[in-house]
Amino acid sequence: MPICTTCTASVEYLYTLYETKNNLRLKECPKCLSFADPYVEYDTLTLLLDLILLKRGVYRHLLFNRGWPPENHGESSESLRSKRVKFINERERFRRQEPSSIVKESKPENTPTPNAEHARYTNLPILSDLLNLLDEDKLDRHWIVRNVIGGMAAGFGLRVALDCHPSLTALIIMVGWTFKAWVSHFASQWLGITEDAEWMAYSIP
Image 1: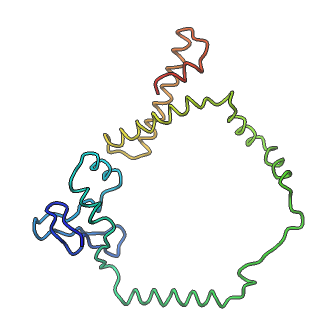
Image 2 (image 1 turned 60 degrees about the horizontal axis):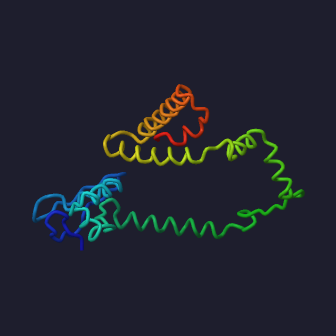
Image 3 (image 1 turned 60 degrees about the vertical axis):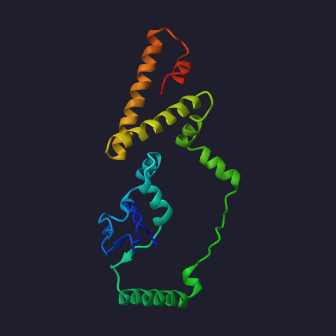
């Protein structure tokens, strides 16, 4: 049985789910008159942050209330029965159809060999250019790994500090990456460093 995350009193249910999309109403605790479990509406990131902050409510939510079914006021027994009847009728109609009309197997006359398929894909100029970008001499994997880790850390920090859309956060990170690469390239030329790749690899992401 679920409990209230504030006073640990037992409640019958946590929230009521209605028929319309994303329409739910939280249950009020009869003892402390607060919401029984407000973490029902929270996302995973908020739960993780409250776990880091060692809040008691999130631990009670995860231990006692996680996955508890709601009180459903959206569908009556008649509507559920009609949906079951409709599903059974559709299944029977699908079963009566001839197998030849459902699955038509056709064997191609000229089946290409794997070597021919490989040669056909490698002859494409765009695909060959993309494959050439993955070479060791053209792809600096150390720089990419450092920037990806730095971008993930910056994105997590911006998501916590700012209440903005994820696309805006990604745009801020991309602008920061571009500015950082431009400053690193300009500083390497100004300092007279010839090994630009080494300067980019060890620059701060």
